[in-house]
Amino acid sequence: MTPAAAKLAVEVVEAPLRDSNEIEAAMAQWGRERNFGLIVVPDPATNAHRKLINELAASHRLPVIHALRAAVAEGGLMSYGVDLPNVFRQSAAYADRILKGANPADLPIFLPTKFELVINLTTAKTLGIGVPLALMVRADELLD
Image (cartoon, rainbow, N blue to C red; front, side):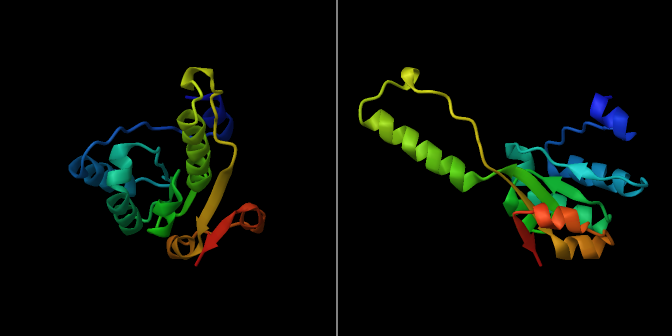
């Protein structure tokens, strides 16, 4: 258990899921648990199955936090992650410097500097979750 999880008295369960059958089985099991929620890490498998993840989470009344805004627009509860358009702008500036003759090995490594919090209020209402005002005020975007 991580120190943060221990401090919050939360049990962390890692579940690497690769295909729709594994996702369906895991969601059915988690749907029977009390006080269970999901944090979906960004990877090709979760991105490819995000619609299924959101649909199953809704049917089992499980809150889901994603890293990508698009998953929240498709029904996830919330997301917190990098602002992808900002990352793409940084990438374009990087490519521009390389095309103008800069040696890639000489360029600094850029890390994302802008993160966004998006909350789907419709999903919260469907799940019976009250979103605290303090969290709504901090959100970059609220979806209805």
